[in-house]
Length: 147
Image (cartoon, rainbow, N blue to C red; front, top):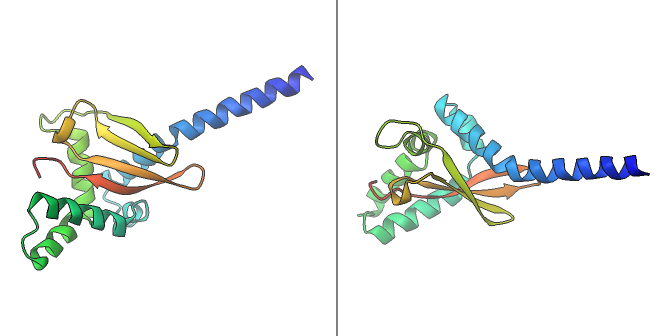
């Protein structure tokens, strides 16, 4: 009987640990797709329509939108696999060129925010939303202040 309880406890701890680590695994996959410039893989791991709406809202709020044509061009540049690659790599490298780690904070059970450690508003923030039990998708981003 004790063996069954021990096995159940081990599986429970492993499941909770894997659930906690899964956003880190997802961001690692996203950053590896960005680094290797696998645009199809990066596009698959991001909710591009949600990202486009979020970036458009931020650009309009900042007053950087200009005309609708300019806004569309900016959105096409930012919310595309190459644009996301630049934001991710800028977030990991930083202005000083040294590699930085991301800090993860849970907003809720289904949403986490990743931001470069100690960067404040200088780097983009990435919001991942849960898809299923262990799958996460890049669903929102906060643009860096210097963009």
